[in-house]
Amino acid sequence: MRNIRSHLPQHAAAPQWPAAGPLPGRQGAVPRARTAVWLAAATLLAAGGPAFAAGFSLAETSASGLGSAFAGGAAAAEDASTLWSNPAGLARIGNRQWAGAVHLITPSFKFRNDFSAAASQQALGGEGGDAGSLNVVPNLYVAVPLNAQWAMGVS
Image 1 (cartoon, one colour):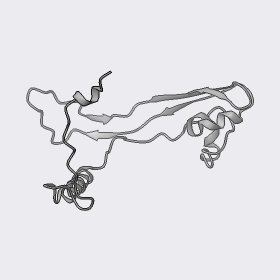
Image 2 (tube, one colour):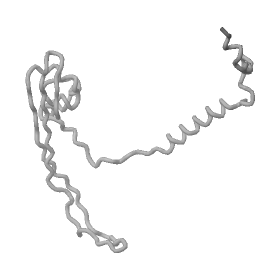
Image 3 (cartoon, rainbow, N blue to C red):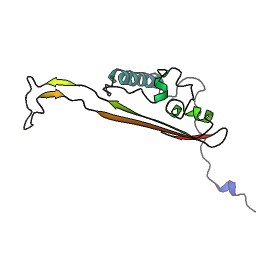
Image 4 (tube, rainbow, N blue to C red):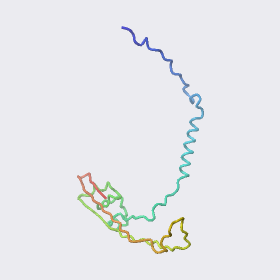
């Protein structure tokens, strides 16, 4: 029986780099990369601006929370509306519950059409008045305990 390994070509050993210091031909590569990362991070932080996305905020997530001005609302588990601020609190509710409310919101945005100019082939809007109208905002929460430790909820 022949030794198969004796017929395989012999490969040269991989070059050995010095144990300490940078790789040959790569002096200064790490500091340049680190500087580039810091420069990119600083550019992203400087380019960001505030987002003015909401005209107003509706914090009234439940009728029961309104009575206490939502004090301790994240820790309390009084009814099914805890699903909004503390979903883990559903496990403390012992029976099936539902909670709901309807909010009637009437914002008022009064304006006048003074010194307006129409854009190219665009009609002007109204001549003034109140842009607010009655808005109905409902909320409904349902809590269903599955066992002593688990519960399911829908909002």
